[in-house]
Image (cartoon, rainbow, N blue to C red; front, side, top):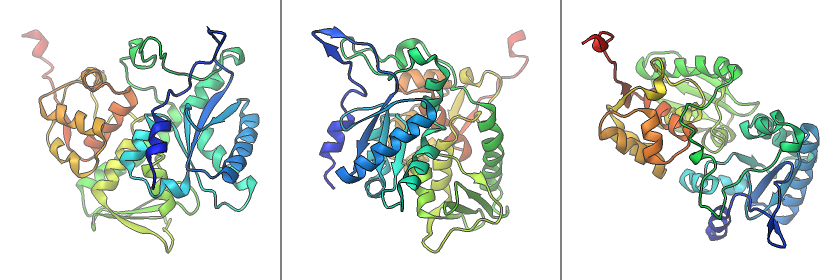
Length: 336
């Protein structure tokens, strides 16, 4: 697989500022989608389906090959790429995976709708007045990161629906990881995308498309008692899958966090094991810093130069696997 073009495209500005006669123009209304790994015929069909999704949402999606706010990745290429390369291509942008083998344009539109409509970036755009909707970017003239350098130093907001759907699953996973005789847990994304988590055998059986949702989309499934993966299912190590589920649960409240957990101390109790589950540089860097001594999530974010969501995802995965713990401060310490 020739990844040089993909890498060059991913390192372009996410959405360059357009200029006319040397004057910087305002951001367009809508979002830019960067397509990767799609043949021209498939790209044309995807652009048409994106147009229809945009009409339903009230947003305009502009498709480019060199930059974008959202990455649209062909499914066949996605399955051949390592998670580390995909993370490098994404650069913390939302990822949409398109299976070009779907039977019809309606199925393609439905697939795109199901992935795009829930995106936080899309919801943020829809919550803004129509005349203020537009693509976000880094300013190439100042080198300033408009997301990181705004002084944002707080946990990622979590909507009530995400918590109600995801928190019970997280508790079941945490309990099962520590109690190996827990019953098998069945979860699903959609029909044909099922996982069976066997805590006693310490393995997970899952449909290939469920693996794509988990590792590439970093999405959380929902509990679905009795769901069974199909004949093409693959088997994965339990702990490796728990790591991916923890990464996907970054938007949920951190497991066991005390009040103001964003500024509470964490210490690594087994963070050296992180290398077993990931090769993503920023995830390894956060683990290394946790091994160096207690630190708060806020401090780790600044030291590792990552977004709040990236930091929360790594901490959540470490908490789920019992690789870090909160440092409990005695309640009477302040009276001394």
